[in-house]
Amino acid sequence: LDEFKIERALTMSNYGVPLHEISFDLNDVVLDAATNNDRVLAAIWVSFLPRNAEMTRKALKLASESRVVALKTTFLLGGNPDPGTWDQETLALADECFDACERHDLIFHFHTSPGGSSDINNFIPLVEKYGKRCKIYLVHFGGGVSGHIKLVPKFLQWVKDDYKVYTDTSWAIGFGARWLLTEIERTGIGGDRVFFGSDEPWSDFDSEYWKINGIRGISQELKDRVFWQNYEELFAGRG
Image (cartoon, rainbow, N blue to C red; front, side, top):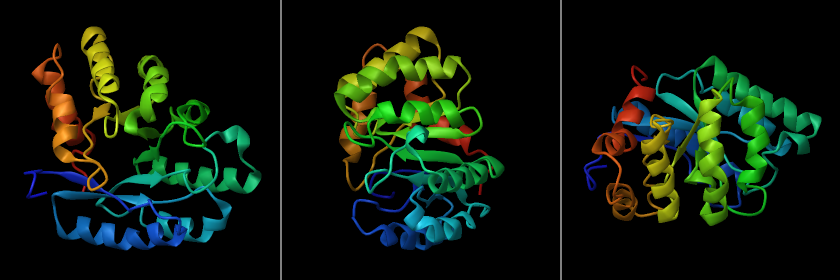
């Protein structure tokens, strides 16, 4: 935070390893960081996979902590975000996660990336099943060229249709971030739903920053919303 002069951050477990237990173990580290630094808020790691049910239910007990503002999961390690593919065990566990999300007014972060289970096509039915109950945050804006092309019009339509959908531009290809924010500037729809994400240490703060700040044809007001104001408004009074 000090290196890049960041005033506020949302932090969460690393999930780039094939051992499911590690991401859950890091929940304690994340919560400790948030509890001991008023610049940090926490996202708690959960899973819809039945094999992780016990660890997920333990993690959900942290959802009421004052510094916890989000849940986070991925389907890189198995499963699928499309509710139409779920068995009864998966559905029950997912519903427990969404119930906790709704009860504690959390925002639910989902990793997106092109192809495979994490492709944006698989998230469309999830958003449309749960996205009016709970805030759903699509990390990496659909991931890659195909995800951006599909998600720009879909995302703006969801906002029009009163879905509680959010995203960030981390790992987004430059044209995707530019197209999304240009459309928001043009239509006036969705300016409060897009966040800056550095995704450090997996991405690079400076390139992520200039990807937004260098967009021509959008206002400084919209850039400020993405960089800090949306975060401040969404998490006002939390922690």
